[in-house]
Amino acid sequence: MTLFWFHIPAFISLIIWSVLIFARGAFWRADQRLPSSAMPDECHSDSGQERAPDIAVVIPARNEAETIGRTVSSLLAQEYSGAVHIIVVDDESSDGTGENVQRIANNSDRVTIIDGMPLNSGWTGKLWAVHQGLQHIDRVIPTARYVLLTDADIDHDCHSVQRLVCQAEQGRYDLVSLMVLLNCRYFWERLLIPAFVFFFQKLFPFAWVNDPKCETAAAAGGCMLVRRSALENIGGVETIRNRLIDDCALAEALKKKGPIWLGLTESVVSSREYGSLDEIWRMVSRSAFEQLDHSSLRLLGTVFGMVIIYLVPPISCAAGGVFSDPVLFITGFLAWGGMVWAYRPTLTLYKRSWLWGLLLPVIGGLYTLMTFTSAYQYWRGRGGGWKSRYYSPAGS
Image (spheres, one colour):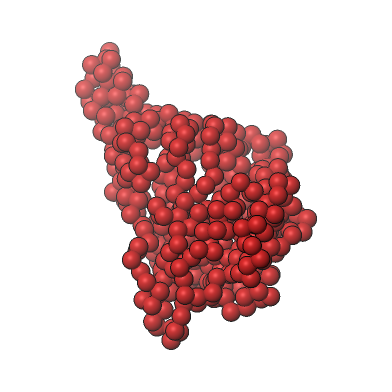
């Protein structure tokens, strides 16, 4: 039996993986990391300052009572010579988020809690809360040179701010962002979360993001240190107020004016858990179709690409073995092997065996279905949703 026509997609898949591995910013290496040994006095020697610059931390929080205590505590425990003031915007929480912050802060003059105003038309909830926090900076820490935008479920190690500022000062970056270490305890987290990071790196190669000559821009919203003057220069977050993928939108706006940096970390971690497939599904589907600019044509292209890249290699391998076609088997094996090999550094970051890489075809299929769910929600007129809020497809 001849399988000549099966060879074509197999060869295409192998060519694509060769291009991804050798010509896409070496995204798979997962090697863009903050230096771990930088000290404050090494970071601003060219600025003429005797101490590190002051920092305003803005935390948008909506029903985050379970996690925000660890976040605020970790920021209060920073070993940093400059001033760090924490502004928590309690975004109409109903679970005692604000009370938890008050308990942790214990009347500290380094923590300010703002009762968020009702959501303004044309804004997404998170950006509306961030906007209110930014407006408060002049009242509590007008000397702040940087703004740390961080989520209410991020646990910062005691040198986190120090390292972020050092990177920004030494590289003169307008934005320094970290893809924090996500939870990987439960089965569905182990299966899907490292792949989420892998796909993000493939979509936005960090080396390209960090290259001022390259247009690629991205950030991870859980941890973003922004130069305050640069943020004001682009008009604040108001310019991206209706964007669901706000982190990448902010990075794109900032990179038009100056350099940005994005990296991975093992010391800044998320305390949010995704114990079920449904939780991860909702997290991805809320914004996946927006990443495709709500284009049905791009959706079809994405589905076709995911099939060729992730499903064709194991199918070719199996078909080549069953029908004794060595060319088809070897082609599928090389593509599948390249896939697993490229995934290995990300799995190592998450302390997972390389054998999980064999499941990338299944994982890719699940993420494709999540993207379809996102598109279906859009077509129904619901748009993205998060934290009991849903937005129109236009983002208004």
